[in-house]
Image 1 (cartoon, rainbow, N blue to C red):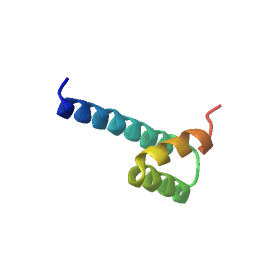
Image 2 (image 1 turned 45 degrees about the horizontal axis):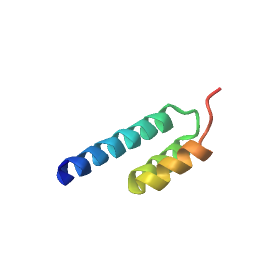
Image 3 (image 1 turned 135 degrees about the vertical axis):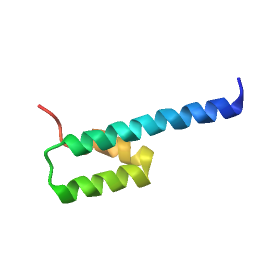
Image 4 (image 1 turned 30 degrees about the horizontal axis):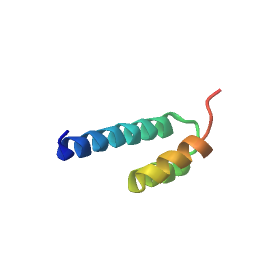
Length: 61
C-alpha cells in the first residue's frame, strides 16, 4: 500500500478524533474557562489531549 495514503488516512482518523473530543468538550456542562483550556489542550497536543479528556474529563450520566 502507498505510504502517502497511509499517512493521509492516519491524519484523517486523528482529525476526526480531535473534532469529536472538541465537540464533547463544547457539549459538556463545565465552565467556560475550563472548556477553553480543554479545547486548547486537545488542539495543541492531540494524542495526549484526547487521552486525558477521555480519562479525566466530565462523565455524562
